[in-house]
Length: 298
Image 1: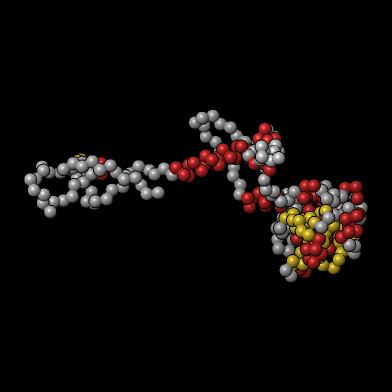
Image 2: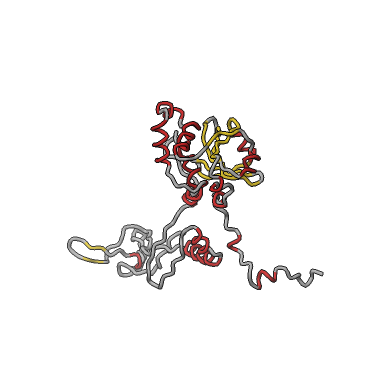
């Protein structure tokens, strides 16, 4: 948007002549005179030697201000404060002339928080085994333990040179569980049998040639929810999982069946759902009148 022009109020700089002179300088708008201070005097008689002028008043982007106000009104009408409260932010009201600060998170940050809400993030490129085992114990069996504790115990008891190259193995996990009172083993069963037993398990997958341990947290129909220490909790189709699954073996805990959590609702809430329904007011005369036929309907 170009800046507004100055009003051109003309004032002659010299007495009017009887005949116009072609060499006379062009008159300068009064509103465009520049006030400035010199070393000896302060005067407004001097003018900027230019025929153009730009006002110093700031240009107000009315379209941007209107868009901001419209967005705020839409947010209040569509119930975004309730959505924000569900994500950990409570609405704040303030009186006039008050100032306050609200924490702002990006969609990427919210997705990362949801993805690792029930899955522990691995700290090293070869520690997916310790992170998967810590996730299994913490969120599927209710025994909180961090990845560092599991990592140190498994690393101290295992082949350290091999672990640094290949990472942890199922044997390292079994030794850790045996030392903490859990009976574990690798079983060769199908995904349907694991679902019928309702037991979470650790599976070895190969994603783009990279072998990786994940936790099978549940299954509903054609969907499988995985606790991936690298990507967080993610939902894949059965076909995708079986194409990644290596060896057809699940690593399970044989005892403590009463503590096992399979298909936990918290594991399925790993995606940021679009709040499409929050912008629709389904209660009130407006929604009721939608079902009333018009006068020319019959």
